[in-house]
Each structure stands twice: as C-alpha cells, then as structure tokens.
Length: 262
Image (cartoon, rainbow, N blue to C red; front, side, top):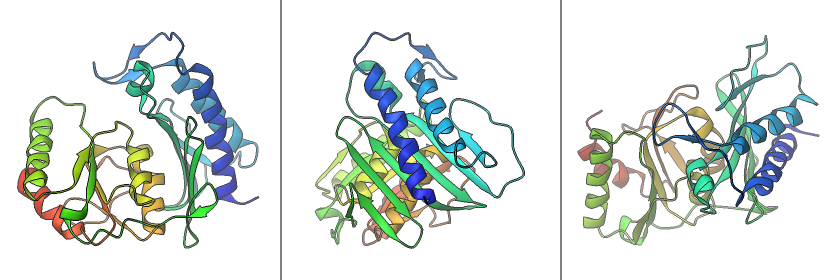
C-alpha cells in the first residue's frame, strides 16, 4: 500500500469521527483566540488519523493542529488538520473536512482531503495527478477574473488583516469577478480550486496543516500556489497563500498586493 492510500485511510478514519459527533451537543472550548474553537471531535479525529498512519509508519514524524508530537529521526512528516472548519462544525454548518499530507523533507508527496458529509475524497500523489473519488480533476479553465469565482478566508484577527481582506474583496468585485465565497474551511477551499469549482483562493495567514494537502492537490490539477509576492511557500511556516488555476494568478496578485501591507 502506498503513501496516498494511507493518507486516504487516515482521512476517512477522521471522517468517521466527524460523522459521529456532528449535530450533537458538544462541549466547546476556546483555544488561543475567542474565535478559535475546539471540540472533542477535533482531538478524537486527530487521534484516529495518527493511529491509522502509525500502524504502517511508526517511525515517521507528525505535525498536527491539536497535539505536539515528539520529533523522530525521519525524513517523513505527516501534516494533519483533523477537523478543518471547527467553527462551522461547532455551529452545525455542514462545511468542514479533514486534511492529511505527507512530506518528504520539504516537499509534499501525498495528500488527502475528506468531506464526510458529501463523501468526497480528494487525493493526490506527487507527479501522478489529483483525483476526486477516483476521477481525475483539473483546475478551472477561466482565463480572466471576469470569468472567475473566488474563495477567501479571514484571519482570526479583527484588526488590520481583516480590513485588508475586506478591501481586497471590494477590489475584486470592482474587477467584476463572478463572485466571492467565504466557506470557513481552507483545506476544502483549496480542494475546490483543484477540482475547478472555484478559480482562485487567498487567505492572509494559514498554518501548514491548513494548506499542505490542498497545495499538492492544486498543483497536480494544473494550478499554482504562491505567496503574495509570487514566492515559493515554505511548508513549515504560517503563510499568506494565493492559489489559482494559473491563468488568473497574476491578476489575483495585482489586486492582493494593492491591499495587503505585509
């Protein structure tokens, strides 16, 4: 069984936890921010995903959102968001997923994103293409912003970063994009760009577990992922992410650079 198969198994094991708890009364905690929630589904989904992988690769490293894992002497790291879209999940909004990626050194080589409610499994292998439930996927053919539906996300801050995101939304609308959506689950947003449901996505600050799997999906589907200055995205840092079908990337960067002072 290859790495991508294991990523898919891990994602589905976390998805079963999501299904078990979604819609039930949960004790909800705050993490570092008033707006950053945590539920039992987050921690149990992470445990399920990590346990699923460790059966096959006990020597590998893990970087996940909810728990610190002691570093081992391995070139492989599994990067996991056990429940991306926790705030949606906690409020009963059915837009959330699990994201699992495997990196060899600084390069993601396998990825899986699973939306259990729609039973949609996105997955990719490095240099082998991206797929949704067994069918090859490709980015949107939109050649201009006027033909593009975009997705964005809001940083937890309610300060300058939020204002700059709102300003960029305004400017994209002035460019007559088809529309802009804010779904609240970055890994799913990136998956939607990979399969052509949206032509582009941007967000001020994402953690590795938010973007690692989605970045590979988009690149394997023919798209592009960079920072706001076209720079390569460092895998193990919080980053400004701009993702697109490649054709509108330069146009997106022009709008974004006009509005973000970072």
